[in-house]
Image (cartoon, rainbow, N blue to C red; front, side):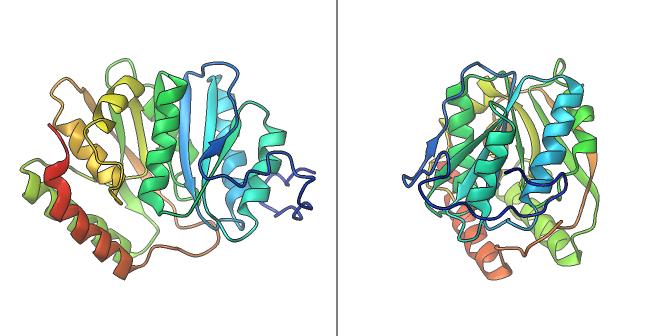
Length: 267
């Protein structure tokens, strides 16, 4: 029972017949070997697009000949996302590893994935989103920079997701940079490749309960003078399906809480 190459949603299996039917929060599959690259993909209610997104990213990693594991962090989805991820894990044995957790939001799902990547001891960790906005065509440009850098971030020079999202990113950049006294750039960009040893050091300085983990991670990395940086221009696509689960009110709430607590990110 495999999804199509683009994104047709497979029929939900009966309970008890689905491999990896995990009721516990945070449970993941065992990875047999240490990959060169761990990919963190937080997911919530993405049944419309997730098969296509996983397929195109797996194809790109395979084309580049990279040893990788895609950590699909299912943040308590209420649709068929979990079943689709199990089907994809069966299709890509050892390359797609579902993690099931209770819903706690995008940032904490990222943190769960980052912790898993560190535990795997992969040399590199890539974080991307699950809605199809992160285009795999740009990944090779980031990957080529890894010998000269420790943190390689995409820069959304063009994007298709609308003026409102552009404004949110701009406000986030101005507010966090002004508060921290450091230009954080596109602090919340979900297209980032980080040397896992540097990621581990940064996570140790970030409270686990932060909602906007990626902004805090950018700050922690910027404060580490030993981190070598590269930035790569990318195009950010529109969503490939489904609806955005994060709305302006929730973004404003998370942003306010982050600004109040950024001082807790250690130096």
